[in-house]
Amino acid sequence: MTRFFFLILQSENTLLIAIIAHQSILILVLVENQKVKIRIMKQKKFVQIDLNNETHCENLLRILDYYMKDGIGMGESMPEVLKPQIINGLRNYAGYLGFFACVGEEFAALANCNINFSTWQARPLINIHDFVVSPGFRGQGTGLYLLEEIENYARQNGFCRINLEVSHENVKAQKLYLKVGYRECSPPNYFWEKRF
Image 1: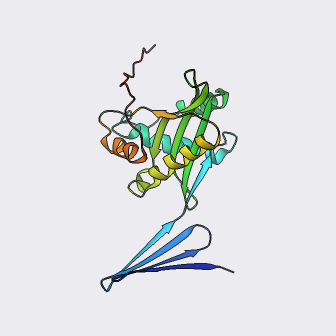
Image 2 (image 1 turned 90 degrees about the horizontal axis):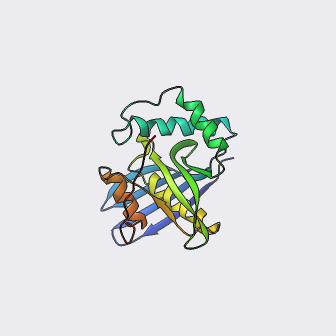
Image 3 (image 1 turned 90 degrees about the vertical axis):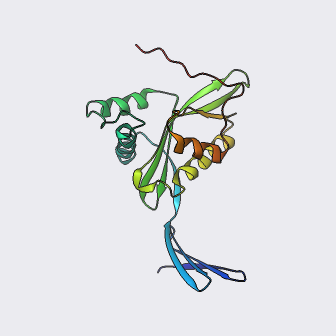
């Protein structure tokens, strides 16, 4: 038996009816100035990645590949030889922490994180190393949801902060991070590297 829950909100010119069916679908009916708009939304779910779960590993690689193909990434698909190396490397790295945002039953966004330690605060911190929203879920609040849930996780588990780096060219990601409350480090820092 399917259960439905209704929420009705009304103002002078607007009527909003929210219908929740099952556990993962939200139907919004908006009547505004005698015009009806219907929007079906699948509910979002926050999932911690289990690297012993084959479905999680497949989706981690699938979503990470979107990032690699993107102009901000490498501009080409992930080499097949790299896939098992990524999963094995993450399994062997004690500081790995990963999360998905699922929309309905679909894996929609990925955050690959590292647990680091702040010597200034004597508490652990989370570094978001990869943050990717699948193309079909962009612009729908999925990235915002995932960032907010990572923050909730961090607060509940005694982390002192979350940090991340973002390319100067990735203006959309910068806007998202600003929206959630991220700011440039104060005082400003450079992000340097030495490759070998």
